[in-house]
Length: 372
Image (cartoon, rainbow, N blue to C red; front, side, top):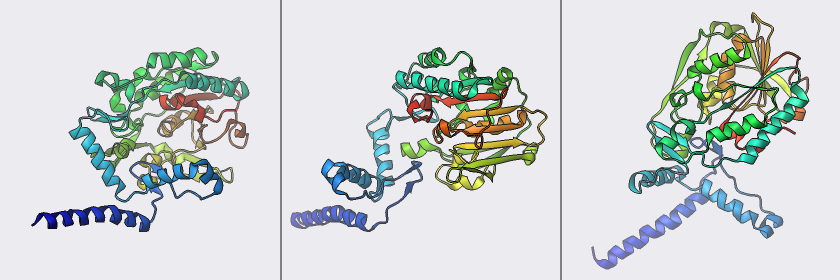
């Protein structure tokens, strides 16, 4: 091939790549979600004079083009491969691999957010929880176990814990779970803990809160689970099993989830296996992120009731506690504002137990909690 022919060939390939991908993007239908990243993708922004004049349209359009680019996932995998295997970067978008666990490092302790979170729960206590048995716990993230020893940035967890303890109302009892967990109690490719590994956590809660749960559970296995870090890292991480626990007495347990449109409770399943094929397979636990859930044990040997203020970790914990209670009301204050906690949603009965349990990530960004 002559130099001229080679140059023409290269020019044709270059033009095809540039304009071919451009026109491909024009005609491809926009995707609504990224299943591997577990998030909604940006859609074409509305065109208004206000957005054009203040520059927000172009900013939103840039985000849109990045999310809707043809072969986007393939480029993300290529970028991650090059970052890890060629340039030997220690992380990709703060996601790192330590042993066989993937995690996203947390390098900033937001003291103001942590203190604000404690004060929000104090306000919750003063408004609703007096004359109740109130307990609170912090769920450590995976970085607590693996970040520092593997050379990755890490917050001062002792300082974090002390900020919570020194600012929470002294009428609330702290239950320390940091020493009840280890790294293999969490999924390798996900942020969450494994339900079948929570025996020590449940035992500690039982001892401190004075209830007796059920420990005769059957483990049910779902294969090919890929956690949130699988998609975010864009690395070829192996799948793992997701395990959910059932018991014979679950046949007499009802689950009702609040419809956030009608504000009425609707009958649902403890574990909805159809959710396993949705964007986040972890949503099989109590339907995922929901504002309010009521679990009732019709044949409970006790009249004790529990109100749990939780984040997503609580979805897999609550089913393990219902054996010790007649009723558990599960509330997520990221999705329902505290002024909406009316009698129709939750009954704050004198003498009931209350468990406030949230992970480090939520407490370090407590502005997302709708406590007013």
